[in-house]
Image (tube, rainbow, N blue to C red; front, side, top):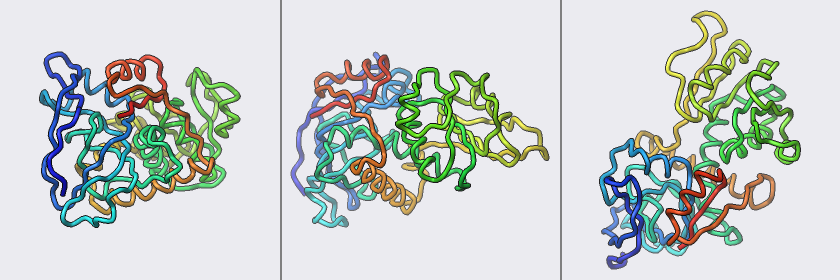
Length: 315
């Protein structure tokens, strides 16, 4: 156990719904915790949305940020000391101090090991979208050759399309901005510019737009099909009982930290490590993020929100 460290952090200001740079101090680690010295932190929509609206009622002083990457520098009594020095990336709980700081404390089973050749900036950019994409794909049984539809083509769905293709699905996409070059790169079968143009039925539909939009897509499902809501969930079935018997799925990556069993978290991290290896071999395409200094975090948050480009800050 190393002594307490003073470090720079970006803390939530409840009065302004913004972040302010202040000094924090590391606390003593619990037996199963690790201390990570962050090299980079990734920015996701959940970060700037929660800073702006504070749905979890964060107190002033809370450190936001869910994605980060760095080096393990200290471990609790029940954690193997050999982990010190390992390079990791992670998705942090929303209710605990996060990645927008030079140091972050996490449970030892909630990090992914990253290879030496992977930059910390790239590693910090992937946990939330990559793990969300994997969880989304896991909701649906593999049915080789079936048609599926993905609505939206942000960071999550770019990974999701590729994972679904690897599992043998034929993937169509609804996206106003996607190009044929994007389709060829990701292996997309067909692009629809808007949902009203969709003229097929599908085994499964994955939506990252919202419950209302997802509900509009349900009629495009085959009987016994699956609707997977990545942003929010459909509260009431769209189809009447004893008709098409649609299965409704909700994806909520952050919830696993509070409600998931330790084994489920470990399995998720192992899945993430396997996908990271695919990124490094080129079997999974990952966009290079835009990079800002950690001193520019407010500007980086605005850039992520306005440009819709994956963004990281480096420490």
